[in-house]
Length: 527
Image (cartoon, rainbow, N blue to C red; front, side, top):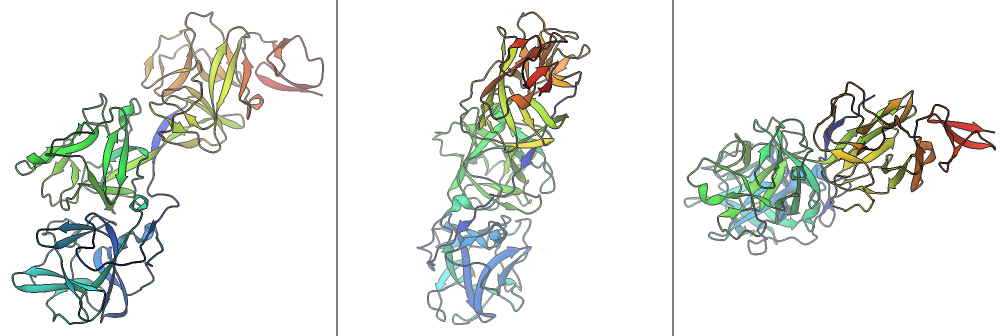
């Protein structure tokens, strides 16, 4: 019998077909900015008479091309480098800027510098920028960092690289800016798809590793495994509830608890492990809101920060941890929105069974069926799954491709579970057992048959029939040519080498008129 294998998960690296809309109306004052809001920064100075936009790409730059970002238009995923998250400090009326492309912030300075440096390690102090109304460009503001009595203005050199300089207040090459807000932050085109189920993975070697998957087997205690996802528990599934501006609650699908950290420990402990908390937790020391920004080191990855934090990032250090004032790059995290299932070729089509702890959507090009043994007619009845395969529901899959991606979903399926059962982990069976029927082939015919006499297990996430003391059968052959597109059908038991059936499942001695018949699991056309 050929085996079907449940394989790796598909990583979704962006919101397909979506983009975020930039406002038409700019703001230029501290009071008008929203804390946590995401903006594109338009600037004018003598180095670029036509104006341009701040962006981040290995270094901090000012672009001389004013058409890269257009107010009132969609901002594509490729232009996340132009988007900045604003953190307001109301005490001294300043802001900090974190780039959505890779999560790096504008650092402070101790004097005139020719660029704001790449700051990959986030090891320098955060640059808190003051506002000053521009005396040269109406409707714009200057941004500067205060160091003692000196004002160091953010501006660009001839090459477009951003830096800090001491300048006269009326100097035209200051960083005169306007802020254009993203109106629909839920559509920020980064790796996390808001309010959709996923599996979550974190690197175990800073930015250059993809690491292990995060799950909670008992709904509360966090566990991390290696390169293979744990598909034995609903506790493997997570939902990022919220959006990029207001922050996310990371909800465990099994327990409905949320990922959080006790921030009261951060002042004294170098490392504080993350944990799961009740969603309505009222402890003021516990933070359960998270900021998500890009990470360019691992394809499709992101950084995770406690909401409102800038320098401190989640890492994997002998467990999921949050570091106070860390200077490292942080561990890259990735989400996986699909489960890839391998199907086995039999004839011109491919087939598999599956049994998962969470609901998935049937992808295009795949047919899925629940199945029940009908003892009265010695047959198996199939019911087609039209859209969603519910959690812990055994199904037969049919297609033409050898692999298919099944999107995770929170939609509840309505199909009857049928008689197929399944196992989320490897199931031990006795060699030569007659208690189960598993998907395989016999004499070239696909169907459910007794396991190979030497088999001692049924693989994890597989579906099968339990005979439950019924008289043992050689098995039931399946011919999907008779059921494709039909809500239900019967496929007859193969316990006679000469048995012949019509398409209604009735056993006949021999064909009496032209048509399609099933004999020994094979289609026969009588003309």
